[in-house]
Length: 72
Image (cartoon, rainbow, N blue to C red; front, side):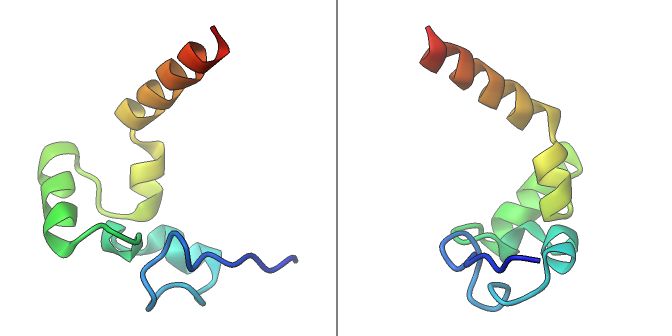
């Protein structure tokens, strides 16, 4: 399996963890996301992990809209 440098997107404590652990980690594992941000995401959308955030339908909808705009 190829190694990928994730230090640009992950908090320093998580940058060397296996991808499975990162996906199960709290969203605060993402660089720039605070513990409080994680609490608010959980409260608003039920997001508890990085994987939950990736699967959040609102984030997917926003990405799709941005891709459509970029393609037009």
